[in-house]
Length: 289
Ligand code: C2E
Ligand code: MG
Ligand code: MG
Ligand code: MG
Image 1 (cartoon, rainbow, N blue to C red):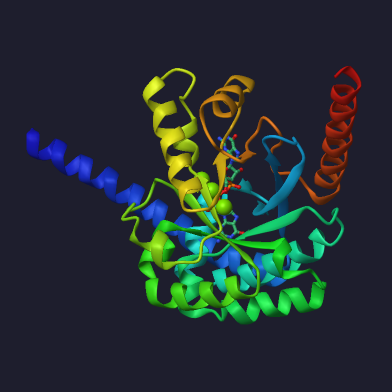
Image 2: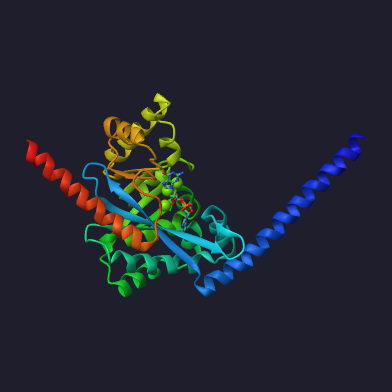
């Protein structure tokens, strides 16, 4: 009986794997088509200065709306793009589109673009950045490249060389999802980072767990000690914001509290609205003191 059960189970696993495999194969082919047809889209999430409450940057995030399957999350299609090598074409497109869009925003607002490990290995990232800046006319200091710990460690030699070249031009280099990777910390010394983005998992339960808040504030302190701008990702509530403001040296906030990733028109409106709001607050404060 046990044997029959075992066999039945493995058959189920096998079928599931088969379905998964076929599903991924289908997505691979269709992602390739979507990239070729230019049907991916880009949304922008505001990153807000904690003190001034103005938008200082927006992160460009890719979206894939599949005609039959609906919206496919980047956590699913980005790894597929990395496996197939399609990522370099996507990165080129994101860089070009994001830098062009940033030209429509106020001078003080930058744009952040995610670059994969695979890009450092296979694509001419420096050339792609150069082309994007040239065709958009965006000043280099208004562009920021986001890389993860994993990307930096997997492609250490290439990443070191390319990031040094970009940093020299005044392009910002952010270490994304900080705290979730290998955390060997030695690359913090070797690479020209300008910003530390503390992963959402450190922010998630600070309101419930005092240890999490301590951890977050110590990670922020580490970033400040080595002269980095520190951003907290995934801030969703007013309570989290207040705790961060009171107990940490975090400079910037990114999260659903201030805005979800938005299409270009909506993010431009949000930038203006928050700037107007910040000015009003300042005038009111000056008026009463
Ligand atoms: P990431 O670079 O860390 O981007 C931040 C992710 O956190 C985004 O997810 C964003 O929507 C989400 N997020 C922001 N605030 C909150 C919040 O308050 N709560 C919660 N629950 N989530 C929040 P998204 O857009 O699904 O992207 C996931 C990941 O996919 C990104 O993580 C990035 O690693 C990758 N990705 C997205 N677009 C691109 C791209 O154009 N190129 C590359 N290479 N990777 C991309
Ligand atoms: Mg990012
Ligand atoms: Mg991130
Ligand atoms: Mg993250």
